[in-house]
Length: 308
Image (cartoon, rainbow, N blue to C red):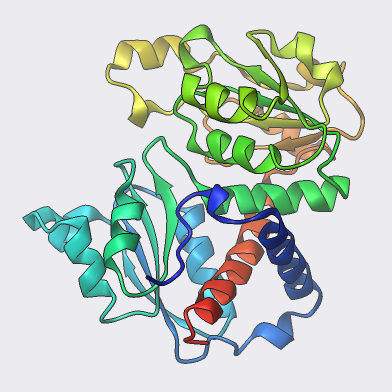
C-alpha cells in the first residue's frame, strides 16, 4: 500500500522537520519548485464545505506545475447515488496521482487510503483530525517563535469537536516541555481519549480552565477556534455556547508582547476584526503557510509513491 497521511502521528518528528525545511526552502526559492509536478494530477474530494483547505491544496499543486481535478460537493458526485468511499477511492485512483479528501465522517479518509492505489491526504474527517492544518500551524509557530520546545500553548473554544486542536496537541506533544492550557466551556472540553492517550500517557503538563483572561499572561501561543454549528445535534446548545469566547483588544491587555494568535479559520465572531491590526495576529499568515506545507507534503508523498 502506498504511503498516505491520515493522522499527524503518521509522520515522525524527523519527517515533520523535513517538511518544515522543504516549506521554508519553497518560500526562499519558489522558482526551483515551479515544474516539479508537471504532468501530475491532484484530485480534491471535498464532501464538506471548505474554502481555505481546498483552494490551498489546489494552489499548492498548480504552483508545483501540476493539475487539479475537483469534487466540491457530495451532491455533485456519485456519493449522492450511494457510492461507497472505498469505491470512490478506487475510481479516482484511475484518474489522478494523489487525493486530498475532506469528509464529514470520522475514518472516511482511512477507508479511502486502504482502497486507493495512490496517496490519500486527510483534509479533515468529521471531528477527528486535520493533519495538514496542523502542518500549517507548525510552520506558523516555527516562523514566529523559531522553536517548539518550552512553549505554553493556549487552546480556546471548541476543544471537543475541534479536529484541528486534536491534531495540534498530538504534534506538539513530541517536543520538550510544551505545556497546554485548555480553555473551553465545560460542555466543549477536550475529549477524554485525547487527555488519556496523549496528554496523560506522555506525562505532559496541562491545565483546564473556563477563564481565558486569567490564562492570558502565561501564553506564548493562543489558538482560537470557532464553536462549530455543524457538529451540534441541536440548535439550542449551539446558540447557548457559540459566543463563549470573543477575543477583543481589551482581553489582550495582560498578554505577552510576543504572543502569537492563531486560528484555523473560518472565524465567525470569536476574534474581533480589531485584532487583525495587532502585530500578534498570525491567522492570515497561517493561511499562506498552509499552502507551502501542502506543497512540501505533495512532493514527499509523490516521491515515496515512486511517481515523481
